[in-house]
Length: 252
Image (cartoon, rainbow, N blue to C red; front, side, top):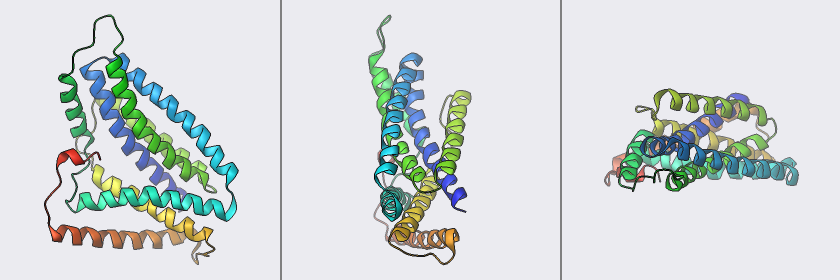
């Protein structure tokens, strides 16, 4: 159960963040130069890899036992509740739905207004845009993956889910040359929020000495509680009205 939920959580989190990064890279590649877009993306990936190599071992080396459960649990709660908060607002119509395709179109329109790259010179403007887009999304991916992998037994499912997500997103990008248009990103991000928040609650409780009577199956009970609470929040917010969010808020 823990393996499956960890792998699913890692896969969805990585895939959704990479879809947003891919939207920016493809917009730069199709509007300016492919070389600048790829160079910026590769540079950002290298920076993220360095961050991952530094943060992961430091976390595991400095914290152990119940303290590690608490640190990992708090970190997962911080990430998960933010994803869950945004997911609830999106499902309730209080925040614009997440849409990588819309971001791709908007980025291309914005790039069309920029001066074209000078012939014979490297496109530094395209490089910076691609680098920044991948770096911002990549850092969040690295932090989430590192925290999931740092818990006892978390490395294997995290790696499996992350590798599958990376292969899927890169494959789709190479084949389609654009983000998926009808991907239910808002619902998937809501699911990621539920999974991360569930793990955070479970591991914080373990670190504080709680002995779950059902073992790892207790994750399903925690997940059910958070699902019920979040769905109740969606209904309350949707019923309260107050106007719908604009599309510009989707990526925030």
